[in-house]
Length: 460
Image 1 (cartoon, rainbow, N blue to C red):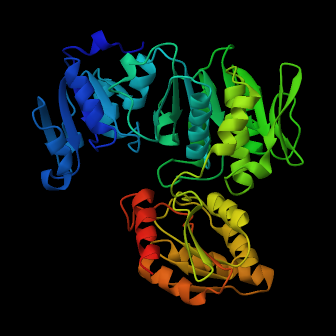
Image 2 (image 1 turned 60 degrees about the vertical axis):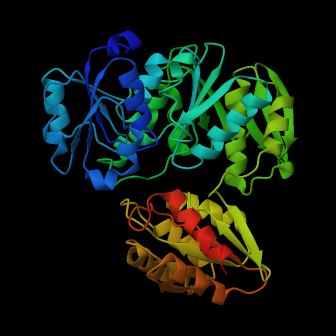
């Protein structure tokens, strides 16, 4: 049963994980609705710092430190942070004692009056979500952007009218426990990712499938026809399947024919735009544009509006972002690339003489295919972080398979990596931060990593 604003009043609520981006807005909303809120976090008061300042004056209790999950008895509602697995013993015990386990994004689904369009996938989520939002705005729609991108929508969701549109980016962590699906769901692609958190690849795929699993026959799911795992979902979808493709003409959806982006919908075929007019780099971004176009096509947006929006759209920060050109060498910030497939797409998009910076925290994904791409297409690579040795070993194996060598070095810092790449560069080279790994071993998040890279590059 969906939660309502009225059902929150007077309930004892535990919010686990109280970061500024989603935890604080959720707590503010719950307190304003009359809930009795306790904030739980493994951090100390000193580590929380600005978070506690942001909640100053609110009637909120705190349970902090490493043993914080041992104090969940007596609560009606438990709001977990996305990265927290729903099957932790402490959570299962609390649920067995009568608590309801939910999350901020599930509450947004409960309370939303406006139709929701949501995007998930291993790569391309943020760009596709941002493109959908841009197309809806170009069409004159009242639209709100949230989920795993931008700000939390929880404090304003009850004021968003039914005539508006909500556009969400959803991660596998957010989707894993969900039993609700959006009006329009998009799955960009699926490849091994986050296997340090998910119990298996099959669980990861199943979590992604939750974006369409609870749809009605009137709802739509947009699937990548070129991705075998995504395409295999089609027979199981309860809603209406629409495809996007760079490689094939699809029966219903958006596809690329030559240089033309085309739409085939309700028995009609329409030209949208010439893909050479896009400001986004790489074939993977053409796929993102096609996915976004299909998601808006099923909502009645014209091909002319789609064309205006996608041809004006510029890259999102940290996504093949050109930082500067120095001495005829281009420096690209692709910090969002936290999976091997994303880095491989970036390498393909940039092309030419590439000097790559890769490595970071380990998500237990294989680097074999990435290593082959590096040996085939990269002249030199600087490896950083916890996975440096693991990637180097994969490159060694790839070198033996290919019968050729790539120059590589393990360095202790991002700055050392940039300086080393600068020395290897020559006019026409591209220095590219595209780590293929998460950032948490050395940085707060991928945005922190990308901004530090830009600061280093701009100081050269």
